[in-house]
Length: 153
Ligand code: NI
Image (tube, rainbow, N blue to C red; front, side):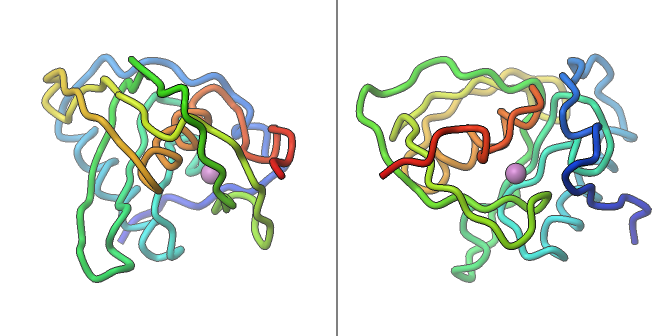
């Protein structure tokens, strides 16, 4: 069980610009596990640290568990390294903004750089739902919501 509580708009912690993670220890690993627990319990596919009141640059994602294929992933200090010119529009929901979706146009394919829980550098390319999700969650680390974008047609 975790003590972490999901935060909802207009909680000001959601507008914080989060600080880089500098310590890669058991506490960070425990936080990642707790964030995944909160995300699954809320039936979400992505959760950023400020959504549980932690202003550190970290998010978790499991893009496929709802299809019966669990794939928990942890992204520490994520940065977009490359974005496709091609754009995709997805109706995005956010655990911190209940009962609302927002159609957001984002690059359809992105390459992300991040650190894992050991601090090792990782790189990956994401398409489809996962591409939108990593961009949505990374935005949270700068206090940006999907609802801040103009509604896409
Ligand atoms: Ni969100």
